[in-house]
Amino acid sequence: MASVRFVAIGDSFTEGVGDELPDGVVRGWADLTAAGWADSLGEPIQYANLAIRGKLVWPIVEQQLEPALALKPTHLSFNGGGNDMLRPRTSISHIADAFSQVLRRCDEEGVQLILLSGANPSAQLPLSRVIQRRGDLMSAAVVARMGERDDVVRALNWPDVELSDPSYWSEDRLHMNARGHHRVAARVLEALGQRVPEGWWSLPELPDAVRLARGEYFREHLGPWFRRRLTGTSSGDGREPKFGGQWIEVSPR
Image 1 (cartoon, rainbow, N blue to C red):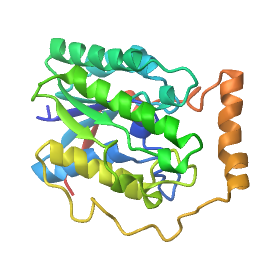
Image 2: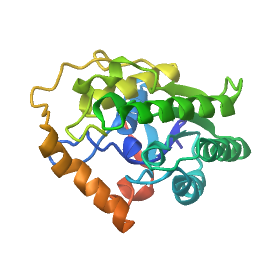
Image 3: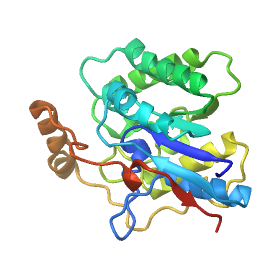
């Protein structure tokens, strides 16, 4: 059995949406972290990713946490609340309660928690001030729930001003592109005390980056988002987790 067994739970941020490979496969920071971790250790690790796009924070906990812990990981990463934050009525304490629950269960199972805050897209979005304020409050509340726990690995992306630059984001302005996901993976690896591959903190800007005009952006991205809210559907409906929700072995390159 590998000495590192890393499982990730969450929403589109952790699934890797925005970092699509040429064959259409979604990669993202968690996949990159697993690869970088194996490279740094010089030995294979086990990796699983149960994240599903579109999930609110409590459904992540209710649907993903126990299956993730059943895999008997050594490390579990958790991020959530980004979709909650975009809803009209959001309870910051309700979101923070979910993080407390994940920490409690990790403690009970002897699993080290890797805590992530999401990157900050607010500067590019409508109602940017509202989103910024909610994100600030949520980030502070979650960090407060962790207290002085130095055994919780913290990779806090929300305060990273550089990561808010449009060059780190995909055309929908809600999900990071490959450049953004590499920067987050670099932060996680650094927080774990592992070697960060050269260039991951700031890859060259993507030459094919698209910045849609306002009308086109609303039509292609905000319109479908509002329709899902009105119909009570989610972009993650019917989706299964990567790799069937099971371990894969990630070997050093």
